[in-house]
Length: 145
Image: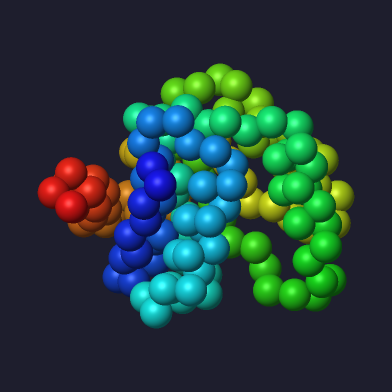
């Protein structure tokens, strides 16, 4: 699977790294796996790094995403911030479309162009060095696995 994750309880970040061609199913599986990790806490932001990948995401995948969001119970836990880091204008538009079409829940999905933009959105400006080190160590652990 070309999707990996790491979690920093100190920074309150789930970092999902995508490499190569990634299907929506692979991405959703990684998100599900990360939610079961013992380090995962409520309120963590998720950074999905797609700088070294392409997403194979089609219309049925978009419908599944929207249906999932719309089926969440009212009054349930607030959805956490999710940042998609990508240079792809198509993925920026996809994130906007999913956000607009999700009718029942306030999806907190935003596409940004750099990890620095993601850190700013997660209010990690004061912890920028620690966050960058965490991102780099996460990438290095994949290369050495």
